[in-house]
Amino acid sequence: MSRGGARSPSIRQGLLLYLCGCLLLVIICVAAVTYAVALRAANDAYDRSLLDPAIDIADNVRIEAAGARVDLPQKALEALVYDQSDSIIYQVRMADGQLVSGVDDLPPPPAMAAGAHRFFDAMYRGQKIRVAGMRTANGTVVQVGETLHKRHQLVGEILAAELLTTLVIGAGSVALAWVGIARGLRPLEQLRAEILQRSIRDLRPLPAGGAPAEIAPVVRAFNELLAQLGAANTLQQRFMANAAHQLRTPLSGLQMHLEILLRRPLDDEVRAEIDLLHIATVRASRLATQLLALAKAETVPGSDRSLEIIDLRDLGGAAARDWVPRALQADIDLGFSLEPAVVLGDRTLLPEALNNLIDNALRYTPRGGSVTVRTGCIDAVPYLSVEDTGPGIPAPERDSVLERFYRVAGTPGEGSGLGLAIVKEVVDRHAGELEIDSVAVVCGTCVRISFPSQVSETS
Image (cartoon, rainbow, N blue to C red; front, side, top):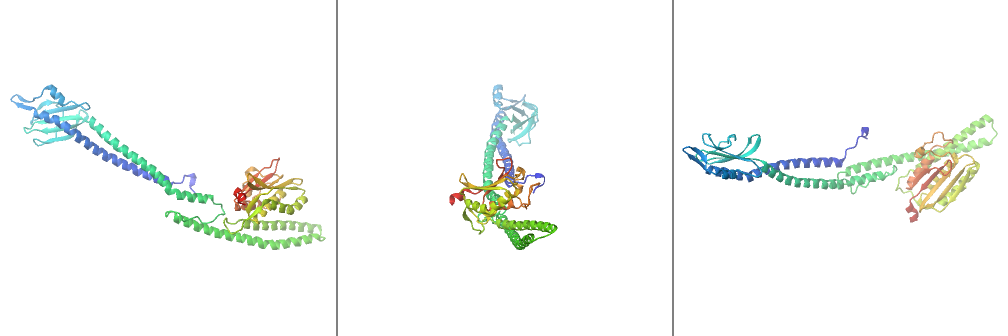
């Protein structure tokens, strides 16, 4: 269990983060390569158009006695260096560096042989420019430079087109990865659902036939653990059952001898002591009987214990014969409202559950109160309920009273806290539902057991 409520790491999130990180790295690499390719393509596309005016200007340089000049009309020269997107400048210098025409602050070109040309990047008045330079046979150097707006625009268009495609592919990859990871983790979700559906008594091995190779060792290890827990649980149940069974015989004998002694004439002090011993023996005998019943109820679902078609009305009728004398002795009105309610159940455990409910109700109902046992069906769902007019069970305690040896603080009586725990085990054994509620009076308790509706339909 993690400390401080820290969230457990997620395999799905880890895989997706790793995949997204890899895709991001790929996109960055693709962007870098695309940018380099686009820049080279833009330079290749526009360098030729930049070299053309340099050649035209170089072809029209005339060297005369008065000096060199560019033999082109001003309009023609302006047309050569005109562009809608960029600013174009030019420069013509003699071999000795003397400026012939154009701007005078254009950076000098790199070394070039006569008749050769070069393309290079330079800075002009704080702006990056691309320059086409060439040296004529007579040593004249002609340079034509332009700003980079249309080159940047072309690079941006190529980069956007390439990256858009890459991003679409990346998004599609993430979506497919999400679906693929979900499908890949589905066996884990199924395994989780299988475990959560189990009751604490269900120690059957998990199905390992369709488990992927990655989680098959986990399933095998978990099944081995379940087998060990099952063996330990069986030993515990066997020990409790044997101990309770072995205790019942001497306790019954002791109870019988004490009752015989109480029939004889005894001193008041001796009778009082024997009477206390008799009460303790009866309680110990009942506790042994409940422990034995609890051991019988704690069976693993799917065991070989036989289930039969049982009418809960018959169980109520049998209980009436057994409990009415005790109810009369305690001055409690024990009533039965029995309607047909057929279930598939254990003929030993169901009477044990009903007897514990009636016994609890009689123990905690004051003299002059009433206890009512009901059976029947509501919307085709068979049920069994026991209502009493006792002190009731507070709502916050209704889950706790189903635990073993738990008693509500301040509750009168001599119960051991096992009655409702036995009932809960029997209900779980029959895949039923147990509800504890208040009856429609000032105080009292109603314990209702509902059984699976498909059982009655099948029967």
